[in-house]
Amino acid sequence: MLTAWISHPICEAHDMGAGHPEQPARLPAIEDRLRAGGRYDLLAHHEPPHATIEQLARVHAQSYIAELQSLAPADGMAQIDPDTRMCPATWEAALRSAGAAILATDLVMHGEAQRAFCNVRPPGHHAERSRSMGFCLFNNVAVGAMHALEAHGLERVAIVDFDVHFGNGTAETLADEERVLICQTYEYPLYPGLNPASVPGREINCPLPPGSGSSEFRAAVESEWLPALEAFRPQLLFISAGFDAATGDPLASLRLTAADYAWVTTELCALATRHGQGRVVSTLEGGYDLNELATCAFAHITALMDSD
Image (cartoon, rainbow, N blue to C red):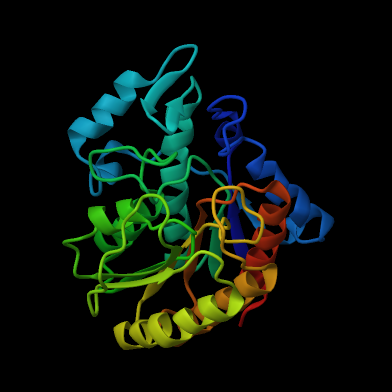
């Protein structure tokens, strides 16, 4: 069955200004690498809809959604927090980025795709219920997970996050949701400066010290993530796919390689096959060295496409 590719031109139009690491060029870098590798045309292409206010409100406060909409500028730039800005295209880009997770969930649940990758921005895993943080406005993966639970009636959904930064927004927005298991690896100490203890059956948090590489990452996945996921038996698996733990990323100092991303993706797809009919939804988070981003995302998407 085909792997879905979900993206929209407005996500590239979202621009937080010259020199900002979360730059528009991130999306075409991934697309160009897929074209060069002969994979782009093998994906099933879709454009995401706008997430509705109702869908966003499963995760975010109505007042926060309204505030963000009111701050969206007609021209120029609006500063939302020290790291995050809105330009005229940002509001629609944010709606479509969350909408991509909605569409991806629908596609895999209806059997129209086995897996899906959402090549969208702004990213989402730092966005809390009532606060924008770290380049993120809406928590795309949390919106998708709640859609799976509420619209499709699933009982167990897992989110795995291998971004180099702790996904505080995902943890905060889903803190009271017993139907979701969240597994994270992240560099610590590093933004946002959080390192909460794991909660069996709910949160598996695996901090990695600066300089950690393949052996440390794989050990955490094998000893912490995979046993918890096997016990939880997720009916659908979401991936917060950040590639900023790769060697050379300017915002961090882990040393993962494309082979690590291919390996973890293959392991996760095998687990999804055992427990969730192979259903996997992956959405882009971080990754700020364009060459490493493209190389590692290519490895991840290729593994999504090729895993049994």
